[in-house]
Length: 168
Ligand SMILES: [Zn+2]
Image 1 (cartoon, rainbow, N blue to C red):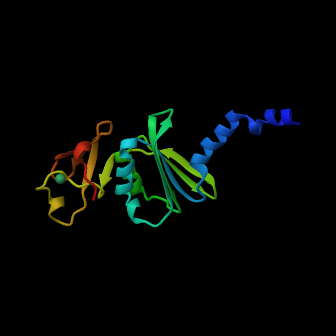
Image 2 (image 1 turned 120 degrees about the horizontal axis):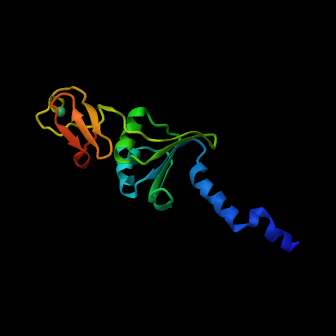
Image 3 (image 1 turned 30 degrees about the vertical axis):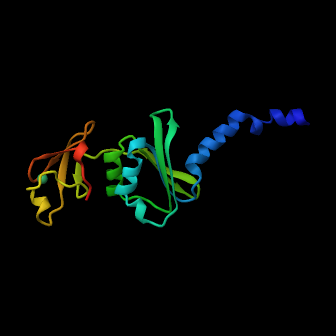
């Protein structure tokens, strides 16, 4: 009897490890998982999504092993689905991120975030003299470099770079 138990697939350490790995992603009933975040961007993602100001259950992991990235961060937010503007913010600070939407413990959507060609409203223009910094006009940028993030302002034509990006 004991011998049979040992060989049962459920008792195989490899299978147990696999089960646990899947749990990491699917353990919330409803909500969104942001996976494959560069570890240094985890807390920036929390800030720009205002996750430090909501009452939803949130699980945060960082410096976890990742085959793709070496190390990664993950944020799981229960009962929260992000709008496209929020997803664009995630793409700007964590371009490697994967967005996973879970409903009733089932993955209903899973895709890598994408930096769009145009960014509206969510980023401030770096130019202090830009009209968007003085009047109630939403910012509007063309993304001229997606690798090394560069945003060209539609109004003043100054370039806002990744290193100095400020969200509205
Ligand atoms: Zn501008």
